[in-house]
Image 1 (cartoon, rainbow, N blue to C red):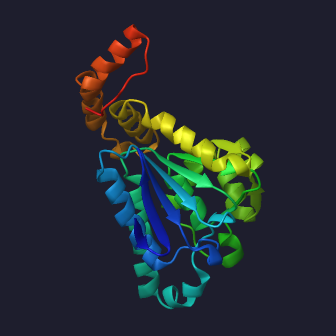
Image 2 (image 1 turned 30 degrees about the vertical axis):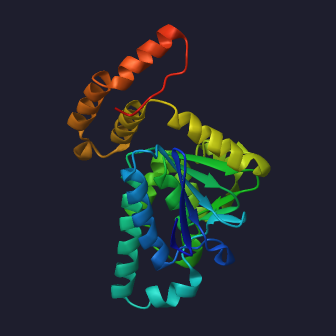
Image 3 (image 1 turned 180 degrees about the horizontal axis):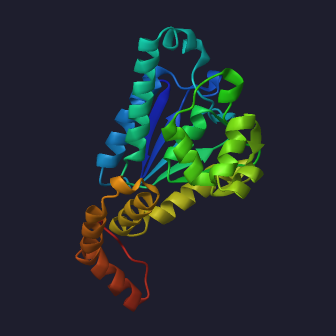
Length: 263
């Protein structure tokens, strides 16, 4: 399905694909694209047949390269417009972070500025060889706030986060893998097949268990006052009370792959 011509969404078995489709601008984000992100992730998260979300950039040259420069004067003309744009972008980011199901950023080409922020909102990041990463805020005089700084620091540590912020340099996929910014780096020709198989592996596991693991890991890096340990405990209990727990034990005994239903 298409939400706007610049944001595409399709459902392929248990995988929901969301594509940033602004290749002429290296998939830079416009206001309507941020709005569409909220709609797409809500639809995927509510669909019981979708178990994994994959985010990708169209055109093969970029994942997301930040803000659409063609809209920069419009959205940065005054404090009110800045606040509106930042509010839409932040709501989209929060929506992406709040997705219950696993999310994967499939990165090919440039992943710059806001693109890094979107990738960090995902649970996992898979990059093609030759991809480039960077946060150019210090070259533009742009302020970079706490939410984005915390996500980057959680992913790669404070010293490496400061390196990227202070120098505004670009790093290649191999360095991104070395510092923990991405989980896997694969040849560009294999990126989609690797990501599809990776997502299918996750989709084949017990959804309630995967959900619980995501809740627990997210709580581990959250501020102490925002850790909802009661919800995690309830989610653990739901796993043990589920039909999937029974199916997992049966499959193990019968030496066959389990067929999990998410119930």
